[in-house]
Image (tube, rainbow, N blue to C red; front, side, top):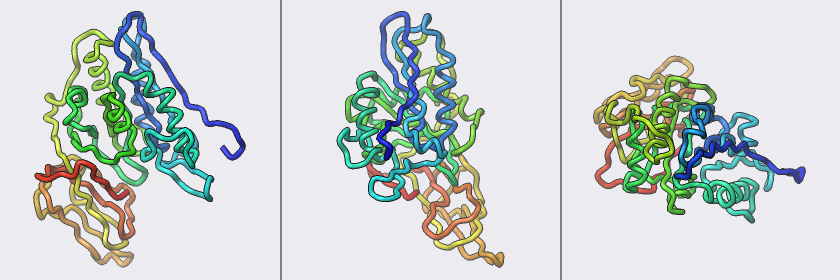
Length: 311
């Protein structure tokens, strides 16, 4: 910090009575993602070390200064006022030019990577944008696919996306990892969180850390898998009315939203150019040009394995 002090993170460890695999659970990389924190806490509260083989370590508040303000990005003052997305910094650099880069480097090199045989980095949608219950994963990695398919959630986004996200840093280090996405920011969605707790307990059973029968999986809910997400971007300013809901199936040419100006006149209508399922929608009712209004999860015959998306 500018005061010369350090940011600390909260670490909880459940060490089993018997040796076994090590799984790391992470949340709070973005500071406005409360359901992700609750999901990790809920898993840890169900663990009994006396009945475990192996270790589960949880870090629930990675981006501490962002969480203090319940905002997405790390407020950095290294080169004037700035907001830095921690989930574009991994694996970080202990001698980097910004505090978030150094924070990421210290955590990844000294805490996360050395204690992980597998890792799960929990997230939600960002402030002003709601998402479905889905997992973001590289399904071409067999160890990742095996874990992701154990979640009873409706969608999987099969894409490598940004190079700097935490789960990709784990995968690049040879540690299978993926990202659950749990609905809206700044709220606790207990119903949706329970799906990810159930899936994570399945993952711990898969790795032999816990014993007992599996819970529900993706097969039980008919999970939809897409490899791309079409962003529908506002071209005007005004009040947005969605014509479809999260998880709805959409067809090519289907109208998904309309927008009105301050006089109530329709200034834009938005359609989908692909067939797929709604995976995200702007929850803030007003939008200026350039804001994403929705994302449609679909299957692209020529996907970009490192897609980037507007926020």
